[in-house]
Structure formats: structure tokens, C-alpha cells
Image 1 (cartoon, rainbow, N blue to C red):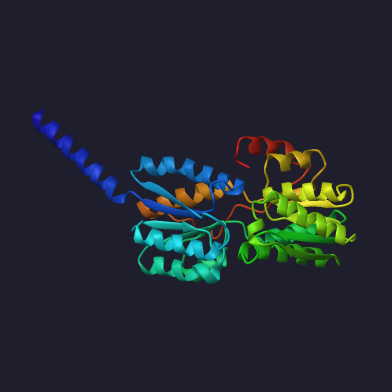
Image 2: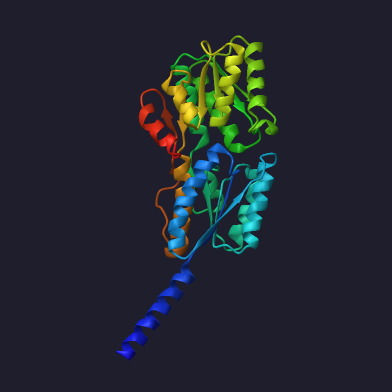
Length: 321
């Protein structure tokens, strides 16, 4: 019996060592914690962290402090993760011109990289990343432009509060091309990056633009928070009856506007799923060599409108949509 106990103890120690050796230390880079969109991604990250910790690993969320220099700051966070000696890095490729060098440095140092939220499948292949998880931005914008045109809009502005961010530029370009297919017009309204998260600045800019051009009959916001501000600007301009509102992403107030007929639609990219998959798939890759055969892993786009608002609103109220 004594020998059996000793054998079992030895097996337990060996199993513990094996678990520890394969445990994944994951760095995941993302937006500000008080950003309504990234709060949903962070919820997915936190849920997946429970799995990582059960395997003996850890997850370190490295967040941007502002969006004033989004590409350069994200690149610096990648370098921070490299210096920490993590096993894998998950990062959005918002501004490739600023971030590619740092991502390639991580891969060159033997640290695998998972792109999520921004960058796309082609960029993941170009850099040698494991995969891309998220929305393909241009096709999503294209779907939004086509939806606007189908529902009567002829002149749309795409309000970009982080000009220069590749994913947002692609969204607005897609909106313009989707409208152009039907012979209609759309252009980008770029605002200073300092306007991001400033509802008053965004609302005032939209109000002034609508009052300055009576032909505008559609406003497209690049985030749910900006959609809230856009609606205020439309109200202040007295345009809620003549201008239709669409947005990327959504929050409860936006979903309620869709339900109440005050917003035409929203494009969903399922941010909770992006955060959850970025962490859980990184954990599986490091620990067990698991990788998805499908590339990219698309979480959107999906159109949310009056036809499917009830089920989506339930998910929004619980912080998942």
C-alpha cells in the first residue's frame, strides 16, 4: 500500500508538471475597458479566461489608454507582450502600417500571433498569423450600403471618429461602394480622433452636416456609441423623419431604436464571440496544437433590423450583443 501511495503521488506530481509545462500564458491586446464595444469583447475574454486558468495558464489584457495614436500604441503593446515572454499574442491589426513590424517581430521571436477584430484573413496569411477571427470590414460596409440603398436612401454620410484606422476606413469605403452599385452616393465624414467617445462633439458635427446639406437622407455610424450621438444630432437638426440611421455594432439603446422604428438597422459582428474565440483558440493552439481548418473565422456581418430585433435585444440586455 505504501508503494502504491508513493506511485500515485509520483503520477500526480508528473501530471502537475505536465499541466504546468503546457499551460498557456496569453497576451491579448484590445481597446479601452470603458469602450462599450470592447466591453463586450472583454466579457468574451473573461469567460474564456476561466478555461485558460483551468488549464493552469493566464490571460493578460493589455489595453489602449486612448485612441489618439491607435496603431502606434497597439504596436507598443505588442512589444510589451514580447518582453513579457508570453506564449501567444492575440491582437487587432487596426493600422497595418504601424503594427505589422511589431507583429512580425513577435513571430520572429517564436511567439505565435492570432489576429482578431481587425486585419482580415488576407493580412493574417501575409504576416504568418495563425488565423483571423472577426468581421471582414469592407464586405460588411458593402452590405450596409446595399441595405441603405434597398430601403430608399440616396445620399449617406459615414461618420468616422477614428480616421486612419484601416478597419473603419474599409467600412466607410464599403458603404460608398454599396450605395454606388445602385447609382446613389455616400461619402465619409471624418472627425478628429479626439471626438471618439465625446457624444457632444459627434452630435454637433452631424447636426451641422445635416443642416448644411439637405440632400443627405442617411447617416451611418461606425460604433454603437456614435449611433447614439448621431441620433441626438439628427434630433437637434429636426431630421429624424427624413434621415435614416444605420450603424456598425449595437447597444441596448440602439436596439430599442430599431424596435421603435427610430433606427433602420445595425450591422452585428458579435464582439463577445471575437474575444471568447481569440482566447480559447489561442489556449488550444499553445497547449494542444489545435487549429481551425477554416480561415478566416468570420463572426459577421449580420444585419439586425425589425425582422429579428426581439431575440437580439435579449442578448443585448445581457451584455452579449
